[in-house]
Structures are given as structure tokens and as C-alpha cells.
Image (cartoon, rainbow, N blue to C red; front, top):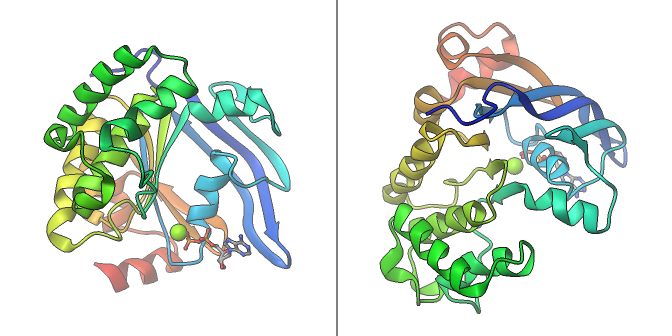
Length: 249
Ligand code: ADP
Ligand code: MG
């Protein structure tokens, strides 16, 4: 299914640089992600993948360059930032659900508070989304009562509830027991097939091959190489990528 506007640039990073003290964590990053595109970001630990996600969501500032979401430049702060940030969903390795809220409340809180959706409507939509990710029977439980795989699916439902323009996934299956990885990846594959714009940091090569339109390979804060999964995995060009793939495949 092609989403409206598919193919137009949605997330655009131009000449983005960032330092943490002496560490040049993002170097001259140029990346354009189109509406409906699924980009998988690969790279060794410490290469800047999480920081890349965090600057796109403005959880971190950038030193220079620009980031636009659907043509709007990320503002520094204030209500304009909250508004734009609501367009960017985020799913973290550690789930980050609100421990003292029920599963359904986790999914309805953002729409009610930020999007000003009436509570009854938010709950109805929340239940639909929980059904979509296969955890509807857990709606009234608390996160700690759920398995890791279930919690991560709730986190995905929570992101979807905000109707984001793009969802960033930062190693969403890395903290899961192996038997729970696929239930989360299956939900993500479904989203990808449904036209959601996604930027996914993952080491799950099966997901990358199945769902990614493009693979971006980072090392030392730079995008070293990018391409369609088939060519990246079978014929990586850079020695960094060759070295990385030889260790994980
Ligand atoms: P990745 O997600 O690819 O493993 P990160 O973006 O988490 O990489 O980190 C890139 C580099 O930046 C690492 O060397 C890390 O130690 C460093 N780093 C990350 N966050 C901070 C921070 N808040 N302050 C200082 N250094 C940081
Ligand atoms: Mg990381």
C-alpha cells in the first residue's frame, strides 16, 4: 500500500555535525528519508546510531547543519518543538513504558495530553492499536506484568497512537529474550508493509533484508556506505562494512 505522498522527502538531515566534548559523534551526516521508506541503520557499537536517532527526535541538539521533518526545521524549544516531536515516534531498546500506568493508559496518554483527543476516542483507538500489535488482552495490566516482547509491542502501539509521520526504532529487539524477537519484528514488518516511514537501528539482518528499502551503514560518526539491502549484504563496498558484516553474518 502506497501512503499519500510516498516518495517525497520526509526526514532530511543536511551537513549535520555534533560533538560530545572532543568526540565528533556525528560527522557531516546527509540523509534523506522519503515518505513510506524504511531505512535500516547498521554499524558497530559506538558509531553514532543512537545519537542519530536522538538528534532527529531533538532529544539531543546538533552543532551545525539542519534537520527538517516534512519540510519544517526542528525548532530549538517550546510548543513548536513539542508539536514537531509528536510527529516523530520513538521506540527504544528498553521499552520506556510508564510503569504506573496500565497498558491502555500508556497508549492513550499522549493522544489525550498532546493531541487533545477526547478520552473515550483515545481509548477506542488505543484498543484498536493494541489489537493490531496482538496485546489487546493485556490492556488493563501494568507493564511489569507483561513479557518483554509484549511490552515492546505496547511501546509500538503507543508510538502509533500519536499518528507520527515517522517512527524511529533504536535496537527495539536487543533487550529481548530470543524467543520474543520475532513477535516484535513481525509487527514492524507489518508496519513497513503498511506504508509507515521508519528508521530502524537493528542488528537483525533478516528484518533488514525483508523490510528495508535502504541500508545505511555508519562507522565513527559517518555514513560510510548506503544501498539497497541486496547489494549491501552481498557486495559491501567499504572495508568497514565488509569487516562489520564478516563479524555478524
Ligand atoms: P551507537 O548507538 O552506534 O552504539 P551512540 O550514538 O550511542 O552509538 O554513541 C556514539 C558515541 O558517543 C559513543 O562513543 C558514546 O560513548 C558517545 N556518547 C553517546 N552519548 C553520549 C553523551 N551523552 N555524552 C558523551 N558521549 C556520548
Ligand atoms: Mg545505540
